[in-house]
Length: 390
Image 1: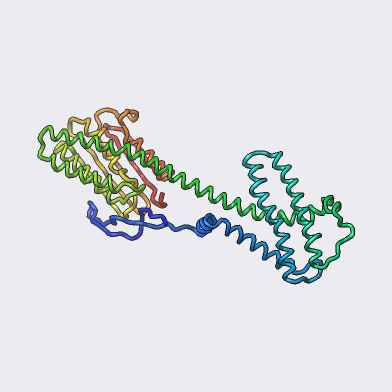
Image 2: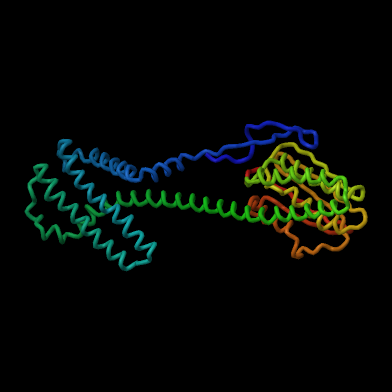
């Protein structure tokens, strides 16, 4: 069972906007019946093969109660059908584990075709010998004068029409089941690898972002300490709370929105202390439903506004942040005044490219991140489609 942050059991805490929202939630995804069957088959591979051939054996016995219009005992059916089924077993494994891999996987078309023709002939010949030399004598059927060894070896049409299609029909069913299970298992492995790849990429992106955030914040506190500001200790306390959240609560791919809002409020508090009355900062939010989002998503866009906006404005910088969350969507807008035109190709600009990469991984085709620069104001607008869980 996989546990993913989402909707489900929860406890509520008050949000910064006065609305009670869940602090931690989970939903559970159980394995499907097909997943259970495949998992059981992988754990008990030999038993699953034995079960398949037992079914074939029982079907063969039930269909061979009558032979050439005569009724025979169950003992005869058990022996004759068991011997005949041995050729079907040989044909199935010969086809599934030798011919198909050689023909399709190793591309040995000529050798595989020749081996199939020769193997099919020998298997059908073995089946006919079992019927003529063992099964029929056991049933009291007198041998036919024309069925000598030469005729058994050379009557190709009979080997094809009487034995080949029946034997290889069972082998084909076995092959189809095996190919289907392999295909499903391959899909599951591919999906697992894709998830692991996404998780690895997200960890790398976070490893870029966290030092980036920490570097900027420590620079801010360092500047305050040089000025012997009385708010330095308060800033250190807020930074401690933020680091505790980042180190111990951002391990998941998605985290509760409430935690991200609290992190954002701590960060904005640090910046307010840094800029004092010079900064015009407004943060509004309207949360209709708690939802899991990527960690540090809200902080990254806000930090980008301070780095490329307020920190470069010697006058009175202005930053407006608006967050709207409905059951179906998230809308997050960050707008800041700018002095110079921002260059998106600047070497130190980690924030926006980092955010775009995370969104591409977690919300493919279900997000937009638009930027606009006009009238000396830069705006980043993020929208997420929350109708289905990423």
